[in-house]
Amino acid sequence: GAVVSQHPSWVICKSGTSVKIECRSLDFQATTMFWYRQFPKQSLMLMATSNEGSKATYEQGVEKDKFLINHASLTLSTLTVTSAHPEDSSFYICSATRRLAGGRDIQYFGAGTRLSVL
Amino acid sequence: SQKIEQNSEALNIQEGKTATLTCNYTNYSPAYLQWYRQDPGRGPVFLLLIRENEKEKRKERLKVTFDTTLKQSLFHITASQPADSATYLCALDGEKLTFGTGTRLTIIP
Image (cartoon, rainbow over all chains, first blue to last red; front, side, top):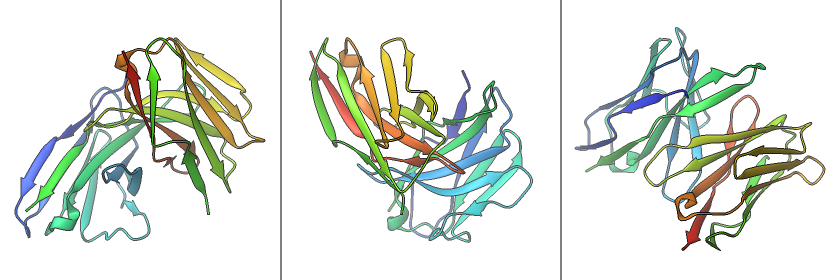
């Protein structure tokens, strides 16, 4: 099956610092990657859609200057939380799309990154 | 606005019984519906996809139905095992996936 690696799995940082999260598709090329945020007992909320070689598309209410996304290659997308504050503490999950036979895209998810901002 | 509801936040089922989870949606006509499993502190894992023209799909002990008239999908796990305990998410497929809040399933030995 398709493997998506997300790193780090857990990070603690001081308020005001920036944190970078990496998402890699290990055994397939992903033209599209997605970044989600999940609060406890809540659903995954899409933050942005990342396409290789172009600017990310952000969902309404997500600050693009706060959450910088770079999709430099077909296997790597990064999310940088800039000037993190305690309210940014959450579980961040990336996914990468892979096309199945029959033309349907399936999203394969990383294991997630637990961010705690002190 | 589009709305997805999963019938209960938590569901406890005795081992060996069939667990049935419900996903209802409104103001939407998805061409596909997907089910995922999510373990605590982990990302979701894709389980099954069902198309709007498919009534039912099976994979080992899993069965998914899709009723576009009722705007409902049912997810069944037969012969449930404690290892099936997890949160199960349905997701509507469109330009982007839209997830339900999930049902936390616990299989009691």
